Length: 335
Image (cartoon, rainbow, N blue to C red; front, side):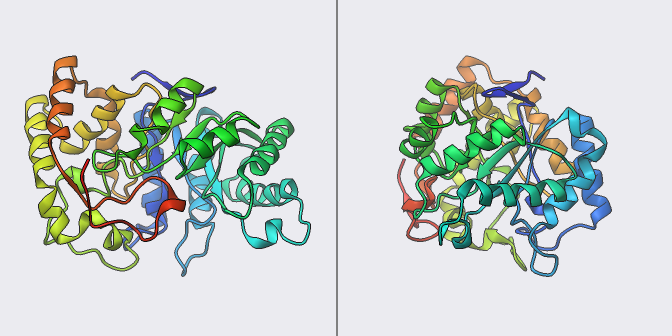
């Protein structure tokens, strides 16, 4: 395993999205199982863990995921890169509120939850159109100067937004939606980030589990499972995107890997600055995903895979820029 860089942060080539231990994928595991899963990921070699202040089911409360992650990583806190995120709320910027002070309050609450004195990577979870991103960047720069965070990032943003923020305080990472089914970032985000030495951290890199081949038209999503609303996972779009699974199956059989591993190996091969954070609440699946860093594609294999993917239409496009979305996703988009 070779490490990767998110600007100055050195991390394992695949990280771990921890949200599913608190909400978003139906029934959550017992706390002991979740803590064990995070620690097994670290033992496997994962050094990059992602959470957010808002991750937590209603019956638990926002902050539940940070508390869980904080407990799990406490024995090896200094050996990992820890990322969390915050949302800007009206009270954070209205009536003359200091943005720096507001961000500081969010950060202090997260650090308390996470049992740490610093956060390695602090994201603005979503752009607030009432607050200039340049103002957020300035406040983040002050938090870096304070030593409370080491770096900062943005999520679900365009290259133009990244550039505005980066011109004030250098951005270390951009966490956007990216997978074989969601490739908008290839147009402008990846080129800009490569040029500026910014890491790209794809969430949902296995397309909400679709690329694993384990989601079928018979799969039922229950409770708070957000996959009920993912466009690619409607019955008609599962059928429409089947050719992509057929391509993956061919490569996974040839490489002795799983479909999910091939989909992750594909992006690792394509971009040196990409660090995907697949999320799962299943210990076996978590280690399988991390094991993708041991799956390599030859130049010829990668080129052939790219050619095959380019010939496929993608059904159920969502998009990587949150402010451009008028719904959770369109029914259809051709590459």
